[in-house]
Length: 91
Ligand SMILES: [Zn+2]
Image (cartoon, rainbow, N blue to C red; front, side):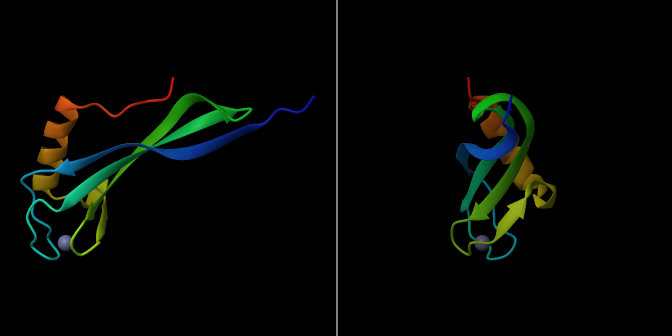
């Protein structure tokens, strides 16, 4: 019998980061944050989450930051947005 077991990363949430300034181009409120969830799949059906990663892209200069490159301002805004809207998960 053959089993198909694999992992995939899918976008599970996107939001604008308010009250932030891009360190590269100094544009206000230009960040869009995206959350990617990595899930184990069994026969192409997501079974359980493995990890979650976050990136933010400046919509003006297109520079992308990973979560460990976020400024304190970006982290505070992300925490505030997370408290309002949680990222969704597959069933
Ligand atoms: Zn920028």
